[in-house]
Length: 446
Image 1 (cartoon, rainbow, N blue to C red):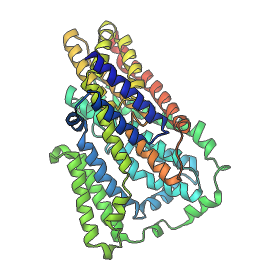
Image 2: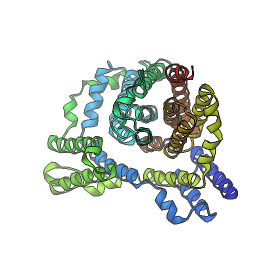
Image 3: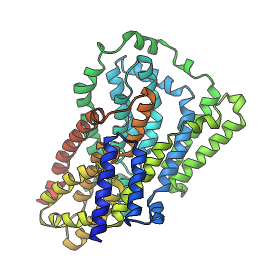
Image 4: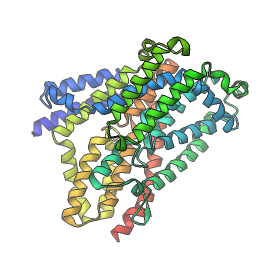
């Protein structure tokens, strides 16, 4: 078992290193890593298939198709003009507002869905003003991935906390007489957005660096002129919002998210194909041709790679190693848990990691008579915030990066990628840690 764990760790770290480096196609690198794990006996090929969360893949596939139709309605261009007007023709404010809006939407909608919804809006602005799309789309991705843990609905980690610890929707707002996930993450996110605007966006996209003639051209146009066929736009919006609402109320409906997303997609495609000429809608062949198959494949192989190291017990081994610190001193244990988790989930997709530690903390709390909630919350926050470091930790950022590379027809280098993710991750981790220690850890350690 030890030899197998060592082999799994070496293959995983080499594969993730190559993925972060980005010089070789990341999906291809992931496939090679999976092949090596199967070849060296880390897992069987049948187990590899079972490690994939096909529900998530179905969500991505279904929503991506719907979002493709949405991008062709003219509504993103319409929203871009309105948001730029709201930003008082200031591109730096526009960028900040779009990122903040994306973050709050992701409290109810999957982060990849948010990126697919909001990216066309900012791309209309960047294309017209001849600006690089990466700063805009990556901030949308960072915000969406960040705020998904603020409430119960937005992402898988809070749903796992609900399953393990029975946390309900109100617990994410106020619990045990103190603010919890929503309020703490909201304060952190807004402070981070202000800092990024002040020290990054304002300098990069101030009035002196952006074509004022281009901005006047954008905001001067009638927003409705972008929507060529109002019936087409209306039908797509109805199906888009209907699918998202159905996903938000999935517990009442009793269906898997993936099934709801695919069902919404099939219904929309059927209507578009039947009334193709009347609505002047794009044909299905054109829409599916724009699907980012590499991103879907990347998600698949990342699930398998993390499943492989979890299968041989590496995550459990790490959890057991940290367990004694939780029992000895809550402040020390919480600090170790937080700052060890943050960099690990930067290279390990965080869902499997968080699930293992949730159960470990639950067992420790029962045996050592400690309050598990400070540890549970710090695990959840570090696991989400730290994942924004790389595309391996937050595959949603891989989607954002692919969109930018396709739009700008150039590769996003590792240096440019980290110039946005590292400051965002460091600032959000530090602010959240300070708030968490003051509000959740120190009072229970006294």
